[in-house]
Length: 250
Image (tube, rainbow, N blue to C red):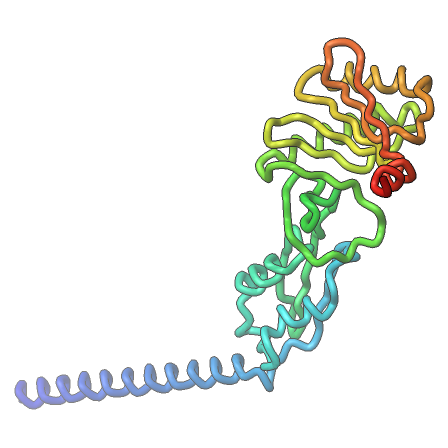
């Protein structure tokens, strides 16, 4: 009797284990089926892209291409938000990006565009923080031309603003600022006059130009003004093209 009871107990245990395993296998298969259903791009595709934040240089087709990552449809659950954020951040003119999903089929993107402050070394830009970046040239409004070593971009931008403010008080417009390899400052005004300011006492030297330039005649023939002196300055004149031609004919 005791042996029979033990046999029934053992058999019940085995049946219970088998039942448990069957249940677990069923649950596992159901989970696979649910995952396959959820990740099927044809069932829960991304149907809307909501872009927030002001932007004028980032193109809509660039955003769409980054979100779709090719022509394949993207599934709501399968889409990796971090991966998408990296792709969007890599786009030209994008400064910062925040991405999140909105059930059941939307992606919300908040963009911060590069706040362009000036052109840098001819073919790049510098933003309001003094950071150099490369991007397609989509700026229509005129920008100041800045140049110099890349690691000095923030300093060049800040100093150019000081020069610009000092000159604007007397009606002069600054168009370009260059920091030479020897860290000397060179300015270009809107009338193409160049100012060689040097490496020290820049505000004092620039004020000297502002005070003296109105009495120089003929001002329209001035090519450059060299302010790299303790006192005074040197004026360079534009070449007289007619005299140059006469000399060539001789």
